[in-house]
Structure formats: structure tokens, C-alpha cells
Length: 189
Image 1 (tube, rainbow, N blue to C red):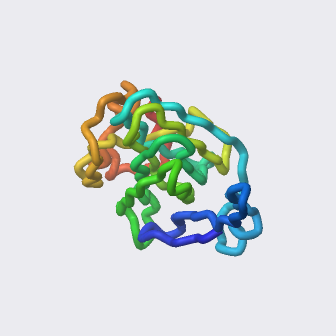
Image 2: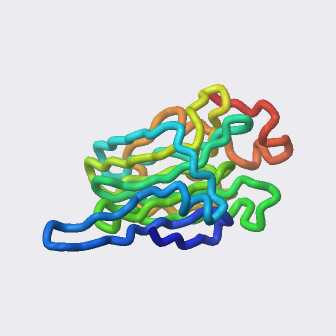
């Protein structure tokens, strides 16, 4: 695997090293030792699959608060997505920065998302599937998020939003939470 660190400290684009022959190719998509060697959390507590009918569907921006912070390794396995993370770690040199990367079934890239980063994506094609490997179990009592269109982050989504859940549309803006400790029982369910 080839790891390329992004401007978000601890967030990596993970590319496959394809071993090709006449049958096709073989590649490792996860190796606990390679993750450990980079100081990343290699735990997989849960694997999730997201299927999305329509191009322009948006899911996000989600994160979990302590004690259930989660890492994610996200890969698009059908279609394509614009995947975005926001660094919510106040001690981080990239605090409140975001990145976006196109993940497609063709490029086979994955994005490793560290704990305390909000995550979301927009589908760029119809019938898109996304695979998530999660570092902790989903804990609804610690689930949180920010609005996808929050001006504090300035994310430029590539398409108009065609589908979004009411929950994702209703997340608070960062400005409304910034004067409180983000980890002090902030639970918007």
C-alpha cells in the first residue's frame, strides 16, 4: 500500500500496489502492520456499506465524541464520490481545515480519517456504493455533526445537493457551538 499524508495531520490517502498478471491483479487493501508503522489506529471494530441511488446525494458531516471517537477507512467500490473531512481537533495544526478527494471504483483510493474529524461525501454518479471500516462501534449517544454547507468550513461541493437526510440538513452550525466545549455532552440526535 502507498500512504500519502494530506494537509490534515494523520489523514492519509491510501493507494493500492497492484500485482498484475494475466488474470488481473492482486493487492492488499488493509495491513495492520503498515498502519501501525505510520502511527495510525489499525483497529477495525465494524464495517459498513452505504448504497446511494442518486447522483448528488450528500451524507455528512458526521463524527463521534469521546469516549467513542472513531477512525474510518473509506473506499468507493461502485461509482464515485467526493469525500470530505474536517479537522475538529483544537490542538491540531490543521484545526478547522478540510480536504476533499475523489474516490472512485476505478482509482481504488481509500481515505484514512483520524479520530475527531468530521466526515461526509457527495455522490458523483447514480448507484454509488461506499465501504467504511470503522475503528469503533457506532454509538448513537455520541453521534454528532455539522451542516454540510456551514460557512465556517467553506466546503465547495461539486454538485447541487439532490438528496440529504433531515438529520444531516438539521445539524448545527459551527458558530453556534464554538463557545462551548465540543465534547461536553453535545449530542444532537
